[in-house]
Length: 565
Image 1 (cartoon, rainbow, N blue to C red):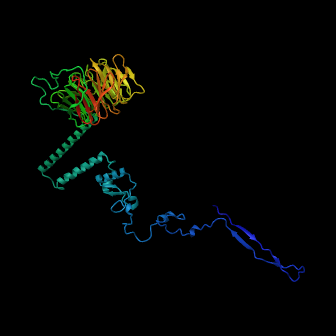
Image 2: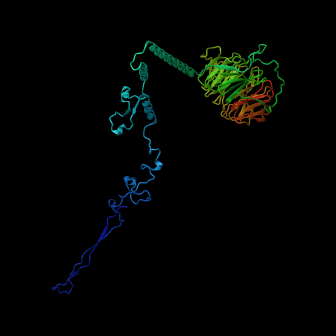
Image 3: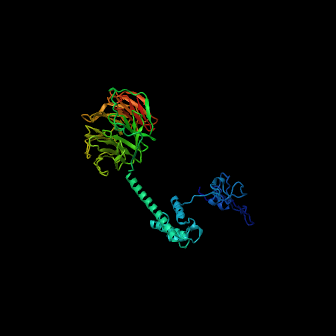
């Protein structure tokens, strides 16, 4: 509190009269008494800080301080004998190096790496301690002559002219070394040296050309396509090729049955299998694409082995599609390349590189045009007979990646679904505006669509795998609308584009799920009949055989393809 001024009271004693001889009244004479002064202080005593013992050092073990010590007093070194356990006067907990404690300076990692590479390349670097050392070296350590020639430039500031100059100096030094430091070479030795220099120069030119070609190839995303045949012979004694339909293959029964067990497993892919397709009409061959960047075709009825491997993508293959006769197929990969293959010979007939990643691919049965739904929100149409850089049509209206493409109405219309949770109906060949636009607030993205049943290219319904764990049915015969009475639930596919399959007679619907199970529903009652544990991981594809009505093929991200009966 504020120090109050002391209150002083003065008390005077009564004075007595002194009698003198001449006083007749008989009164006593006056008596002088000394004046007494008393000083009172209301505030407590506070000592003078300058006279305190605050100048003493504060001990580390002291828990309380009765005054305010200065910074120097708090951080003063301890007095007394040296601790024998402390090496070099450094606390053991602070030691992070064999020689003591190393502290991080304020130099950035980029600048340190720049100076480090500069010293390794040019022989000099900036001295970070030059400002404190007092040396007149210009703040440089290393080769000062080289520093003056390079005008103090670092590796990031050096130009191509500097690199060429260093190369000429190195060549000159090499030539001087070969000449024996001034000794002239003979004609044979000079010719041999010139020959070696020409060989080195030609090798460097070839490497530069190869790198330039590789850069162009990486920019376009198209690599060289190859294929390998794994069978014994491509033709039999009658001249029939290995893709021809066997003469004894016929439909046994029109009625379909639910499969019960796995009868065969194909395990040729090294990574997850993303899609499988039956050979059109017969199903005697099975085409598969995988994340190992390869497409394989398998035999189903004879030895059940891989017949041919197609390699033409530098990244995983997303989707495949057969042509109507099965003589050709298209593949779409994450390298933004769509290829058109010859099934029998394995030749890549055409390759297109788009602006986005193709998520789905379809071949039109009438004119063999290839359609691909891409991540750049467009559906692109190409013609294999046209140059690869020519686009026939682009269907532009979606606000997200196009996931599926399906033909309806005798291949005259195209249905597309996208990540924008919309469904568009297009007139084939006209991409300016869709004919119908389906979008509801409750709709989710539908990454897999299957037409069912198909009669002469005219499907009556579309089975759409919705990401809210249900399969929706859209009628597309007369009017394109949602069938509210039919939806298949029970499986968990949120986040996965699990393919939907259906039997040829339209009795059953099959689908995989994210837990690797195979689900089978009844079409009429939408009741779940059976679920089988098919794969370890995601069961991404399930298709019903077109002739054998009791057989189903599945594929999963465990790299296996299973055949169920």
